Image 1 (spheres, one colour):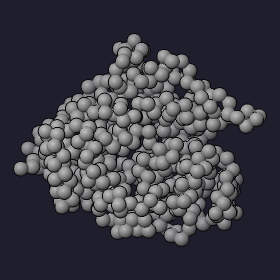
Image 2 (image 1 turned 90 degrees about the vertical axis):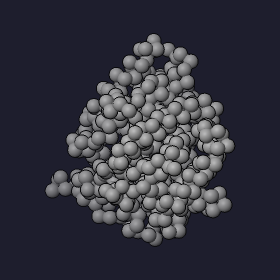
Image 3 (image 1 turned 135 degrees about the horizontal axis):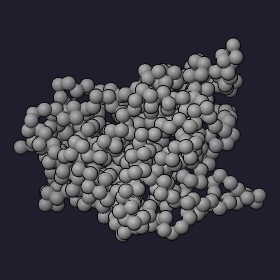
Image 4 (image 1 turned 30 degrees about the horizontal axis):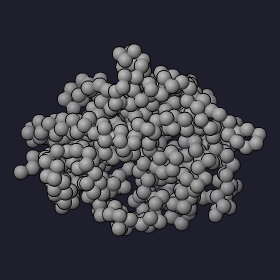
Length: 498
């Protein structure tokens, strides 16, 4: 009886606030099928989104912690922008010292997040991106060479795997200043590291869920134990080669070293205020461990999310030959203008390719949902609903971006949706593959540039077709958490264009 009462102690939360919700299971809440590795968190939030079509919010429970699924774009706008100060936290890493790699820009909260973002933003200006484009171009050419080699064997190529290799090699150059060559070397250290990060074992999944349900009890259990050792060793080796000093190189590690050499990072606090209401001063010491954490998150973000988005786009183009032909005609026309050279300016002119990529991200976003945590008692005025500090907020991107209320015939692959004359600005907070507001993805422009370059390189030389064994719709691994991992890949047939 005691265990039952303990495991259900918070389950009247939404009932008392007159918010509709599914009946939770003791200790497991409404996310039980995720903990039992039956459905991903995205699939569960999608299911609940569709189950309550007339509600603006739906209650849920992550273990015993109350959560709120947002179904209304106007409420999304308040959470991500207007009332950001009440939702600046993601609440994903409550024990940062125990999981040092999670002290990164994505998982960090409060002052650590704000100061890191402030000092990392300069790495993603248009000037910087244009400067690193030769690195992208070189990797894109290697991508074409690898596909040409494999296509002569008349075998299906896993689009997700090949695009992950392309992304990994770019990250190796852009972040570490190293040649990883995972496109050609099956034993590449970078490729193995990426596989380790996303090869979630049953043990890893159990630890992750226990930490979610009982964060204090299982705080010393590490999710990233295997990865932490490899990543810290890799970063330390690169730093040692540079004598732990910036060398004027145009890569991310050098930017971090430049920041460290300037001393403590300082700025206004968003967590602590003086008695007069003014913000206190916050400081962050950019240690080598903290640098490794930032390197880790950019490796993860590039490895999985970009490779997922580009491979999904290729998958859809394989099933829509007319759209594929139109994309290729645009690529051919633009490249001819630039003497068939894949350059920064050429990519910027490939508007239909960009619409196509965005349509792929609409149908299957890499991040199936956005997550926030309420940082103070907050009232949704339109709903007359007040929630407490610590409540999880789920914005179900996969569900909203495939809702016929916002996108007519959402299962149809139609790039023209993203023609500026067809975009409905009233739905601005529905399509959010990179998030929005102050916690939007800092690397959005880099991801877009790298993805379009990879797609242009492939489609200028090859046509893609469905492999006989390929599923029509991507099959999501139920162990997926924030990032949607496709089970069994996306096999396609690549043929050389005539």
